[in-house]
Image (cartoon, rainbow, N blue to C red; front, top):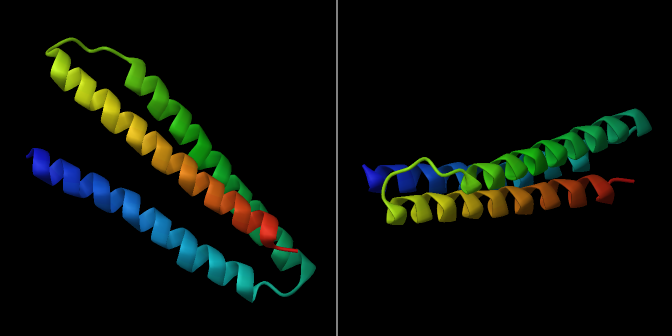
Length: 102
């Protein structure tokens, strides 16, 4: 069960990163008119904000103690912080891509 959760978590973190590289870059490249560029910039900026907010929530969740074994709680905290870091990285990529559109 733990392996399955770890694999699913890894896949969830991997695919959004691929999404930024493929979908975001394609949108940025295909946008030609000022209106299209503005819409893509807004979309990417909103995605960055969403991911930043999710990272904040994950950090808050990492601080919550639910009881139980200390080792399990420490592992949970570590996983939440790792996911928050991944979300921050993804948000940064979205924002950089949004800023690169002129």
